[in-house]
Amino acid sequence: MVKRGAWTIFVFTAGWLTYAFSVMAFQTSSLGTLHVRTVPTVNESRVVIASSRYAFYVEGMARDTPLHFIVDTGATNTSFTYEDALRMGLNLEGGKERCFQTANGHSCGIAVIIGELRVGGIVLHDVDADVHKQGKLHTNLLGMSFLRRLKYFEFDGKKQMLILAQ
Image 1 (cartoon, rainbow, N blue to C red):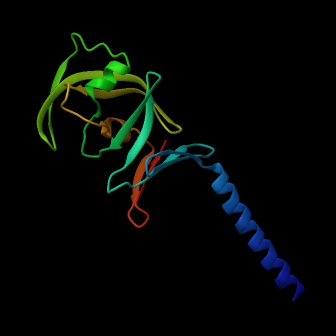
Image 2 (cartoon, rainbow, N blue to C red):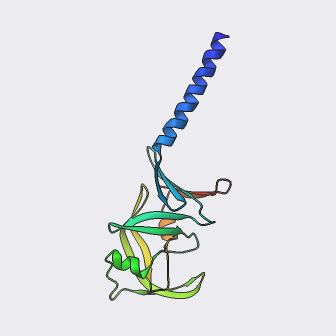
């Protein structure tokens, strides 16, 4: 009986400590009702994004400029609003124009390469992106030019969460 009781206490304590340390490992920021958690591990960084009205919004940073994105797996490239491109100090003069089909129809923009793009603890370099013409895009899109370079990204339908991992 003593062995069984000791084992129960050990399992309970180990479980509680695992839970406590996993909660402490999360660095949480919020944007309205959105919660983004960065979970550092030994060999990767994971970002867990909670769904907000069936969309996944995340905060990021490029060229030392804080940015807001919607995760868009249907977008070939990461895309920036014209206004955020100006805030980042991107030089759009003489850039290569690209046209693309969007959910809202045909659009064109300027092709750019972002030297460093951060989302939580994930950092990617030289990310292909587009800057849409003024007034044509209202929210930055974190597209496949960022997502396909991750170790993985997955959707948890039960919890309505998106997990990005580098």
